[in-house]
Image 1 (cartoon, rainbow, N blue to C red):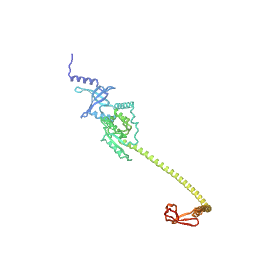
Image 2 (image 1 turned 90 degrees about the vertical axis):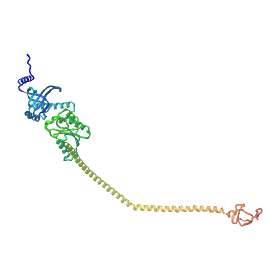
Image 3 (image 1 turned 45 degrees about the vertical axis):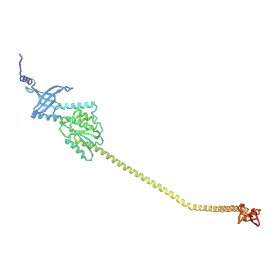
Image 4 (image 1 turned 60 degrees about the vertical axis):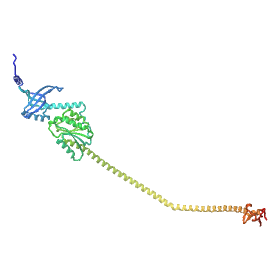
Length: 439
């Protein structure tokens, strides 16, 4: 015969079966989900299990951690693991199974084993690093050459973080007075939106790559449990493949995140990041000073060598000048010794030349005078032969009118008196008018 039960009766029966069949405590491995804390201090959550190689849920159970247990369990877990006790992490907890007629099946957490979570975190980090290694990007950022003078710095940090202020203060007030230009790209450095925020800041820097030398990612203090947000694949892949060297100072010395592993340089704190950058410039300054000292020593040595060479050249020049002066003095003395004989010889030669010229001049003048005398005699003879007396002596005569020789008869007029001169004597005549006959 069928027995009809109320829902309360059925749930009470289930509760009794569970309490009798599972009276003890059990260690359970699961992932925390949908966790929230009530104002009374109790923590309410869900335990879920997913497929090994997928995201599909295969099991789910409500859980509760009473306030008196949660106050001790949470700080113990976070201090031991450096991981926030929050949704999304895998835990191994000691639970008791209970069933309430109103609220149903649930697991009450009594204790937790942090070593399981540590192992899961290490495995997750290892898986991320292995994936980056297989993709060939794990050491890309480390292989970038650090600029010799990294003075243009893109800073990824919270604007209100004390560590950011310490970082900038140390750079600006370094002992050597090195100049640094810093520009903040604000990002959340703790909480659930760290990955999204930092990726956005890196994208903004990537748009202005030519303006910066390095990227510095710093976090001003904070709990060790906040470091888990830097163990994500997307953030690690972005930093590993970033085209500028990434310097990370987000944790303590004993904590190492995936981001620390893939970054170019990892330092402890923001002030350590500033000291590292100052140290790089200090190395360059020391090298420059060493080169300056070497250059100064080289110049001094060169100047000393040049001075010695110049002194030798001057000494040789002086010796050559003295030798030349001695030669010139000797030549001058020889010239002075030859001057009297040369002058006497020159005078003798001049005197002989003058005597020769004098003799030649006298002979030349004599010959010239003789030639001119002969020419004069010839002219005189020709003049004598051409004289009127010689012509008259040969039987010629000359007719004169008024003392002038008549050369043309037409110039005579009747009545003119003309004189005909002969070799001996003359005849005076008067022209007749009629026939122009002489009277």
